[in-house]
Image 1 (cartoon, rainbow, N blue to C red):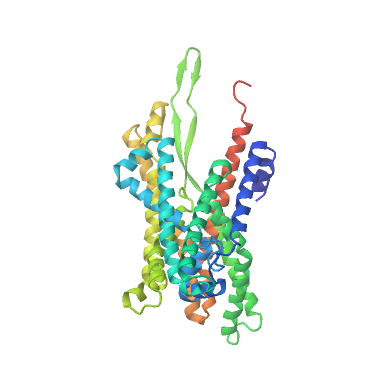
Image 2: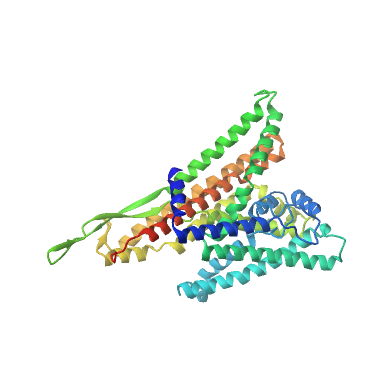
Length: 445
């Protein structure tokens, strides 16, 4: 903790870095202010009532991703979900469509073209989702203006809100520091921490009211609150430990004699992080696993069709946890595949006279690195799954044992902690790397 504080203090001493940090804070402030602006043509109270009563767990998940904008019926009600879904779709298509794959290999020019495709796809998805939102909550449209005009205004507002959030995230990527979209989600969760703490305390009181006569007495509420906080702190320490853990592959460089001087011969290592993919597999899995239920809930709300009912209750069924686990595992390996190239590392080692002790250069080296990364991917996937799913299952168990529906607020404790620590960790590392760049004294000095 002291090291993080020292890093932030030292960062403000670098003028360029200080500007980037202030710019990032400014964008986050704009994002929080925008989340307070109500959507026109919509009855805020009625809209919130429909979402909370009919959308259930899907509504709570979308409210977290929108920084509380969904329940408040603000212009940012849809949050950044369309952008996340768009990024998933385009990245998956990059593997399947040769033209997109060629763009990805064109470096910065190709990356900009792919990002432009992501933007247009985001607006298209936002338009569809905004139409669904408006249709599902049509009874909340204000009666002061014609319903058609109100619907058009609501759809345009929700779509524009998502487009503006996407633009804010890209401004952070360009002129600020950190991953823009992740920081916006981070800021939304941080602002909801006081409400989460109060909600957890209310849950502990309600649960203790169910069982205090049998077990704990009048202080049961405080006991359960302390227990929940202790569990959250344990998850926090566990997450921090894994996110900073790494596997070091020893590398030795052969000696070279040039004239009277000897070069090389030193030992070093290749650091491979256990949590290479960060929190993105969790964010992507959350968006994808909730997509079918979201579509059914929005467009077929109130239907008694068995298929619609099953999808509406999908997030509380055992299949949901299995699908969520498989998606987290899949996205973990997918991110490793597109970010880590064992063949390139092996070739670089061979060109520079480096080798892994006990492993032959060339193909055996790349295979060894690939096997090591594969094992770490399994560890990473199991780590992410445990942090996300165990608190979720614990919350569902409490609901069934105590019949206290508010215990469902525990469902996203692990996910929230994972996102908060992951984004904060990544931000600190980026600040440290920028400081190293600014303080590096080259050979011309």
